[in-house]
Structure formats: C-alpha cells, structure tokens
Amino acid sequence: MKDTFYGEGRVLLEGAISNIQAKLDIVQKYNIAHFGSNPINYVISRVKSEESMKEKLARKGFEVTKENALTKVYDAAGIRIICSYINDVYTVVDMLKKCKDLKVINEKDYIKHPKENGYRSYHIIFELSLDIAGKIYPVYVEIQIRTIAMDFWSALEHEIKYKKNIKNPEMIAKELKNCADQIATTDLYMQTIRNMINEEN
Ligand code: 0O2
Image: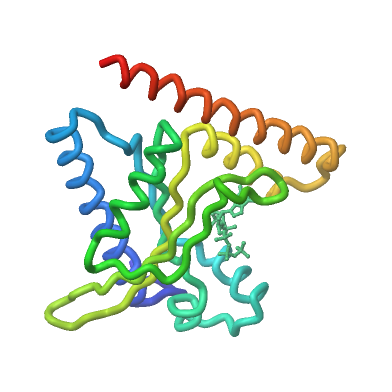
C-alpha cells in the first residue's frame, strides 16, 4: 500500500530497521556461540506513526513535510532493545558503536542521568548509510536500549500521555517517580547478584 505521508521514504525507514535488526541478530548468535550468553533479551521496532510524527514536527517548530520527517526529526525509524541487566545495556551500546556503517549523531544516557519524572533508558541516534542498488541513502534511526524493568515502567508512564481526565495526576506522577527509583535500585541489586554468581564460576 502507498504511504500517504512518508511516501517512498518508508522504504528507507523500513530498510534501515531491517538492516540494524539483521546486525543485532548476528551479534546475538555470535555472543551465544562464543560466550554462551546473550546481552539482548528482545528487540522491537516501529516506523513512527504519521499522527505522532506530525505532532512532533509541529511541536519542534518544523514545517510538517515528509522531508522534515526524514531529516529534522531523527526517530521516524525506531528500534528498542531490551536487556535483562544494566551492564548488558552498556555492552550493547559498545557493540553498536563499533559497527562501521553506523555513525553516532547524538546519544543520551538517561540511565546515568534520569529524567525528572524517573525515565531511564539509553538513546542513540545513528545515521546508517543504506546502499540500494549502488546508491547510498543516509537514514536516521533512534535506538533505545534499556532493561526489562525500565521498559515496564516506561510503558505505564507513556499511557499517561494519552489518557485524558486522570484523577490525581500529581499523586500518580509522584508514585511513578518512587517506583522508578525502586526499579533502579532493584536493577543494581540484580546486577550485583549476577556478578557474584559469575565470579563463583
Ligand atoms: P514514541 O511513541 O515512543 O515515538 P522529545 O522528547 O520527543 O521532544 P527527543 O529529542 O526525540 O524529543 O527526545 P528523547 O529524549 O530522545 O525521547 C524520544 C523518545 O524517548 C520518545 O518518543 C519516547 O519513546 C522516549 N521517551 C523520552 N522521554 C520519555 C519519558 O519521559 N517517558 C516515556 N515513557 N518515554 C520517554 P516519543 O516521540 O515521545 O514517542
């Protein structure tokens, strides 16, 4: 079906996502074969919805056009990598940065520097050079890497954005912040126990 907003740009966005997913698949198999473990739990991806992209372009003060969606906002193509442990998040970040055809455009470590609401995740924007029939197309992809617990929290917190008429929004925000802090403590605790188990082997 023809895309009414991204037009032929959708081919580039989906192509970039497939390309990075293929890299991640190989990396996972390599890690299992060589180290007997895999830092990645699972991977999900999406092309940002037309509605959400239009809202973001307008919010950032850009004209709502396909060109701006592909070049001014960097998360039209998005991949989320979910790991079990915090150290795995940083292992995956390092692995991705070593890929020769991925250029880091921007990165934000919301794990070391959480947002005020408690949001934690590692974000990197890459520029991927997509080679289609000998022509090189630069495509931006946002990769978010986080633990299962951070992802669980983030999904619930994200719901607030789309829910209208929430009673006690301040109380809910406060409870979510408390929960984010407890999750951060638990993530560290789990990592420590895992390190102790690995030391013993
Ligand atoms: P969706 O539905 O995931 O596409 P922005 O924060 O959007 O003005 P920027 O620079 O792209 O601009 O921000 P950033 O910090 O890199 O965050 C982009 C994405 O990270 C968001 O995309 C969310 O997916 C996620 N994110 C960032 N902050 C939060 C947060 O406080 N809570 C949750 N749950 N997710 C967050 P979109 O476009 O919002 O949505």
